[in-house]
Amino acid sequence: MKLSRRNFLTLSAASLLAGPPLLRHALADETKTIKLVLGKEQRQWFGPSGEPVKLWGFDRDVLRLRQGEPVEIEVENRLPQPSSVHWHGLRVENAMDGVTGLTQVPIEPGERFLYRFTPQDAGTFWAHSHHRTYEQLARGLYLPLIVEERTAYPVDQDMVLALDDWRLGNNGQLHTESFGDMHEWAHGGRTGNLLTTNRQLKPAFEVRAGERMRLRLLNTANARIMLVKLPSIPTWIIAKDGQPLAEPQPLSEPLVLAPAERYDLVVDIPAQNADRYTIRDVGLDEPVELASLQVTGKAEKRWFSPPKALAANPLPEPGSGEPDHRLQLDMTGGAMGNLRQAVYQGETLGVKELIQKHQIWAFNGVANMPEQPMLDVKRGDLVEIEILNNTRWPHGMHLHGHHFKADLARYPKGIWHDTLAMAGGERSTIRFRADNPGSWLLHCHMIEHQAAGMVTWIRVAT
Ligand SMILES: [Cu+2]
Image 1 (cartoon, rainbow, N blue to C red):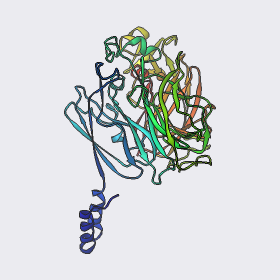
Image 2: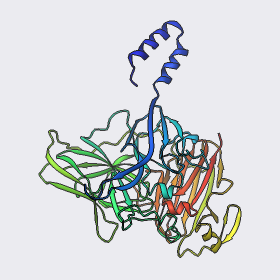
Image 3: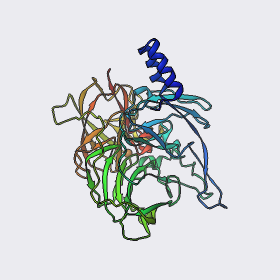
Image 4: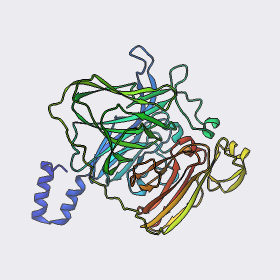
């Protein structure tokens, strides 16, 4: 907090006159107020003479908050559609979670909504629309969100790399006719033909030889799973989905990033001269350059020891004890999935009728949001869900309001997730302590899959 002269005077007067009540007033004054506008924007991706590409977005490139500092965020919607903002990975109060139809009404065009919360966890998060997400996210309605640690983590540069995948039509504009394309919804979701980093084509970042960098990787695509190949220089994973690893883990393989997954990395730029390092997506037939690090000089200081772990966030450990609730989540449907029928809005429908309703995926035989939650728990209960991906497709499972632990061997042991990449046919058991009261979504973050049925919810009683 910063104590302004006016606050200081109020505070002094308060302590002289009345004490605590006025002090409370002074504390409330310290809440930081931020204004965010959802609106139209343009990007000059095809050079100064090219036609600008029309997108939707927030009126800034990144939002930086501080751990433990309360904020009020006034969101104004200047778009032609209703919208909302979800603070992905932040453990906020339920009414602030931004899910239309579950936690709030949509923010109508021209209207505002005041979000209030105190970030409990430091790390890399993001904000995005949670209304008609398959369209609004594809149009660009997202914002990287960094919650700064109370004590700064020692690096020379701290950078966020938000990786996205856009589909442009022949006219060089977003291909909007394919929003809602049922073929894609039944397959791998909407993938694009242009990859960007921080909404730029192949940006080059200036670095110095010998520098230590913190790179925050974030996949903001609707459905593309990125396979990110970092340069072959010393690199460690220090956090996943905003939550620190107990020990930094050296990175040697390309990183798999399902939509919405994040990794914080520490990268040491070698001291010997080299001029350029590239970061590529190697998930496609032809590797694609996402960004590069351009060496422009030498750092004054050198880093000799491996990076330290980040301070842990105050998360409730699920431990290995007997859970209060144990259930299975059977994921079915999609192309080649042999879905015969599913319950949709209380009615059992055959696959033809489901497709007419734009549904083709199911959780435990139910397509899309059930009237009742999949699970009702008490606050503090330990929950264990065995997720069975009985489909031919990979998925990225996201739980709102909580982080969880999973048992998939390809992730570093013991790490936290808010989003979990699962291969076709794979199963994983997730565990979490349900300590946040309210109604929380559990859904696939390949957004077309969510729209076509892969979404349910759990309710945590107060
Ligand atoms: Cu999915």
